[in-house]
Image 1: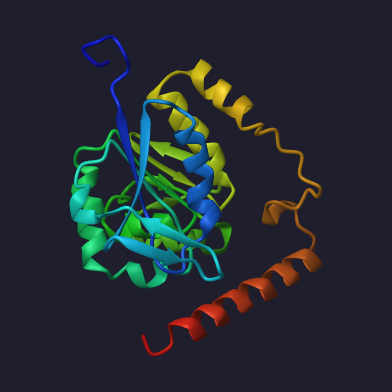
Image 2: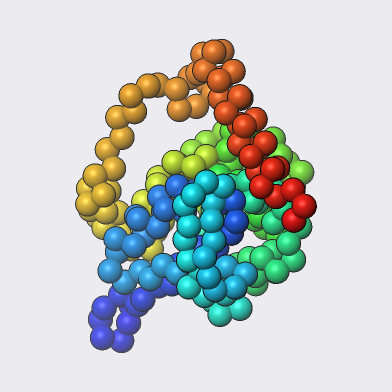
Length: 228
């Protein structure tokens, strides 16, 4: 609480990078940005435009060294995390920021960066179902759940689960009433047209089609990054 009785302003940092998955970050951004005293900043290796694997471009308004101590860290995923697992700059920034955050979070394969930074050892964690077993290589205990909270570390499963996590973060940073109001404000009342949102609910033909889509995405990523 600020000295004037108003809630103190909180800074949420979301790192963006080439070949990210947009909904991973846009989902929690919309939930958190709906709260008046929460400021969300997109950060990157340097200021400037960053693109996903398709045609969506976002702007990093600050570099990592300009935002050393955010109150909350939200690390999105995407195919770009495959190479960032070995990127000292972003991993050092995540480790340093985590020392003082209220919450350190990830969406989808953003958990790979938390793991590579050494933050998931001995903890339950989740990520996209397609790579869930990978978390064990970082010393984590893979959990098949939409959102997993371990102290101040929160991991969310694939892509759309970042919306759920964002609402939970609002509740933790403010109160349950505010979180419920944000959910209403954003009209988050999902009624999916098909009940195939998790492998446990998908028929074999849906799984086969999903595998082919994943293969094409990886092929596009390989073609785009070849020679870099």
